[in-house]
Image (cartoon, rainbow, N blue to C red; front, side):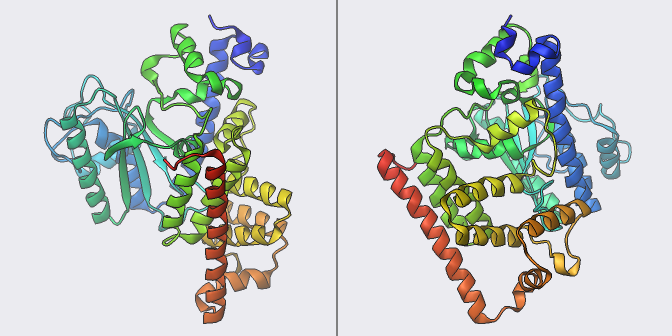
Length: 415
């Protein structure tokens, strides 16, 4: 058995290690289910139907279900059992549908389904799409992965026909993307751990490893499995965040510059977070680790754990510490405009979003006149639009130059 002290100090007061691990799982799922409920609340009926069907579509291979490719396409989500909502959605497509219809691989090669993106966050809007990570078993053949990739493209097309936008990404156990290539960066893994909404399948092994044990993640995780405290068939192991290679910061910054052409406000927030992380290197306190510690401490306030709020808080603390208040004001404006809920005219999304956004803008000292100015951005005169664009471009450039200097100092190539 693993000594209790190695699990987490609270374990000493919360019974056996196994009981504590079950409590932890319950806490993570509590946050997860709260975010999922928020996501569903903001979805149109057709989007809700698609979400209810997602796991079932990967669990059962049936020619009458959307996305069908062939009888040889792998199907089966680990540990998944369709609930009433999934069955009702399937029967809307196939009148006499039952779980015995279609095929399921005994190995259940789909290890996990997770929602990424803005769903369930302050930034969710009626236009938000669904980004879904489909985590695969590591032993799937190239032909099997190819069939699943084709299924994902067909599901995307079907979603479009239903008035929804969905994107599916095949992820293997080494965090390689569905195009092959290099392992995904730790910075993306950081975003995954603190923002992803678990839909079905195995839950992350990362949940069970305390923050103070992150540096010996593999050893600790192995100990849990060896002791039988965690069932190997119920977890998915995507790795740790004990170390981020210096080159990743510049590479990620360059990617955000490219993305900034299309989404400057979102890219500015992400680029500045990377700048914050680089300033802390090599002892980077990733937001995902802060998220995990909150769960271990049973601090589960959904507003304070909102992915956009926590990014803002970290950037705010960094810029205030440097006395860069002009940059901070641009960050606040970027967050508000990225979120896209107009407080001055009642277009503020769901009730909880409006409440949270009002709290932030009052904290910033914004008055109704300033909010109205931002909300009427489409009516801005050309000079004001030009000034805003220059400010964004300048800030993106300043942040990227900071990362480039960091990479030079660390003599690190971009990955």
